[in-house]
Length: 414
Image (cartoon, rainbow, N blue to C red):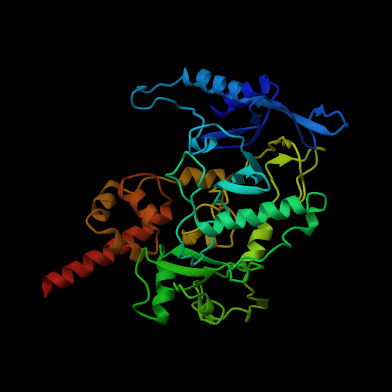
């Protein structure tokens, strides 16, 4: 679908600001025309490179054309592609929107009113991982037809700050983020994570037996320089003044440390929220090339090019290769400072279901009992369903099942 959209806008001579898994932000205006943009194939009268904005009418035609492919009952799902409500003001009139795209999934859409801007759609990707104890009501654009969608207020303010600095430093982006301070600037950058693995639960309970329960939340500081093999957690606290001075537990070794102390020769210095914003604004787009065909840097601007990929033999099979932290910050596994798991062809072929008899025995016990094996809940569920797992998983499950069966016999004998 996205490929069809891209082809249709390209056929009109236009382009887009960004795409996501289910949307595309066209560069469009009511009457169309040229928009200044480094790397564009067009030229303004003064020789400035530019791109072509298609018209709103052409956007509606693209939607109508693609909706001919709608496989659903139109009384239930009328459109598979529509112009979002945020394009219209509270009276239902379409208005011009602007956008700033930093990289994939990191963008903001806003409206201009004379010298002021109104944030319409602030992306939370990359910022939503940070825990900010903001008790204020959530942010909703005032002059917008869409009154259902809201956002964390501090994230909307962060994008206002980024936009302000962007416009102040268009000629010298290296001077970014030097404007007014925000109330959360000096807060340590802390992630809120779920307790989903036995080692995290054990580390928290070592300090306080009643401090954690499965799937409760914990805090983990985001370090300025990640330390290999070091993941810090502490019970959740809504009081920022405690974050810098409290004790944290390293989940692999069980050691208790404080921030700004040394750990295996590394200083545990947390990022501040202002540094998170700075890194967010200067995040390079790795999936594309700069207008001049080079790799994107922190300060690349303009119309990006395709980045060709050349596959070299032999292929290396890997596990989950994506960076999930940006949108799944509450999952503790994203904190591990390890690269993707690599598999050989032989290793991959070894995966197989556990023996049918073992699957029956596994299903006699609860997930909580089986998690004593140290395996993740997802792995246990796959084994219980008879899906393919690594042979070592079957061995671990056989051991824990045997222990649980012995415990059941002892209880019955009493």
